[in-house]
Every structure is written in structure tokens, then in C-alpha cells.
Image (cartoon, rainbow, N blue to C red):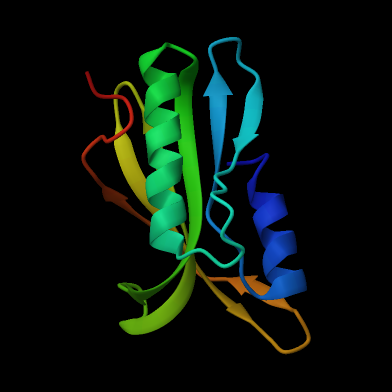
Length: 130
């Protein structure tokens, strides 16, 4: 998260949005960025996320990754404020656990980005499964 989140913040400030992307911790402990591209210049986020999951799952099955994180932009209900909000969502998964982190944010017309109180939701594993 620490290596990719600043890049996400920069994309939000510059463009107001970002396409889904992923990071992975390799077996060697190196952190890499992972993307998906099928030739479509304006793909649906759901398609990009699905493509990322396929690629990450294949590499994880080969033992190449110890952990992954998929980052994407959503509009979601914030349980802290009881209101709909924009949020950076991060799927985090390794061989032991899987969860989503939600980082609600506001972005002004002057590109001032402010994050609210985050929350976590446990999910079923999709990448590190046998």
C-alpha cells in the first residue's frame, strides 16, 4: 500500500480519477506494479479488475507472488458518515487473508484531496486459492 498509494493520490489530483491497477509482493520481496490492457482506451473498471484478477491469480498459482493489492475508485456508502462518497478501494490478499480497505475522499475543483476515516471489510479469497 505504501508504495502505490502516493501514485493513486497523484492520479486523483491530476485527473480526478484512475483506472484500476495492482501491486504485488514477489517471492523475492520486490514490489511490482501490475496493470491490464486489452487495447480499449476507455475500458470499464469492472473489466480491468477482472483482467487484473486473472493475471494475478495465474502468477500467484505459480508461486511468484506472496501478496497482492488491487486499487480502484468507487462510489460507496460510508458507514462512518451514513452518506455516499467517493473512495479508493483496495483489495488486499495473501495466502492467509483477504479484505477490502475503503479510503473515502473528497477532491475539490482546485485538486485538494482530503481523505476521511477508512474502514475494512473481510472478503473471500479470489487470488490465492488452490
